Length: 287
Ligand code: SIN
Image (cartoon, rainbow, N blue to C red; front, side, top):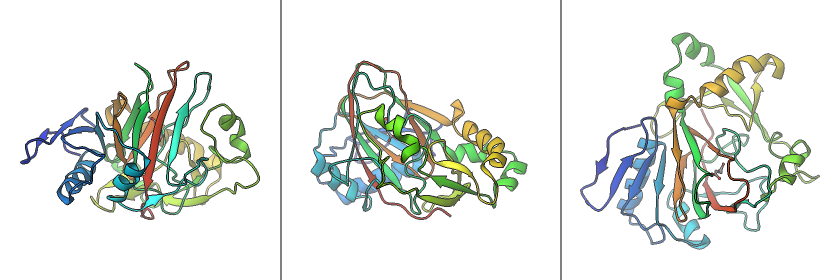
């Protein structure tokens, strides 16, 4: 990911990194409008260059949110978060909630065969402070490993399941927050093996692809056997030097590349309402 600020020839557009590891703020875009092909191309390139990109001062309804997402791919319907509109997840924290969506480091929906390539999240109601989101660059997490560890991981596959965040095992989690998971008899566990080190389909770079919310072990090993190495990789993947932290305002937007980043919602505002609207964009099978 690049670490230099870019002012495009259009001049009104700026792309300013917010941290050494990843993340850049873009200005000069009105995401509620029909984007031109050139604007889509600039945003897409910024996403590839910076892993996660941010916008402020945006205001768009669900219809415009869908139109925006469709400029980058098909909409991905979330399999277990309950929502009136399958294309959209509203992530709500009400005062009194003791758990939140995204409270562990994760890449989204990693248990499906073709996890989403990204997500676009807009802040509708946020506290004056707190409720930030952290992101971690998984290219850097891979690049910084020793050659020995890279060799060890080269052919390893991880089993990813939704049983930690949905289904009966997640009933207490779901009951403790306003945005609910499927936990009843209509839920079936989804498990898929994905490479521990995946290759980004657009940049060709390798990145680490395991996460706290979905990865339960390695293929061909018991979960107990997997734990020491898996736990080490999970903690390694969000060392501070791989991360950035985003402070939301009402109307801020984050668009992350779900293939090469992880993220976590910081659970530090217990008495305040926080409402976000998210649309995910379909992706490919990791390889
Ligand atoms: C998520 O994990 O997608 C939610 C992030 C957030 O609410 O900040």
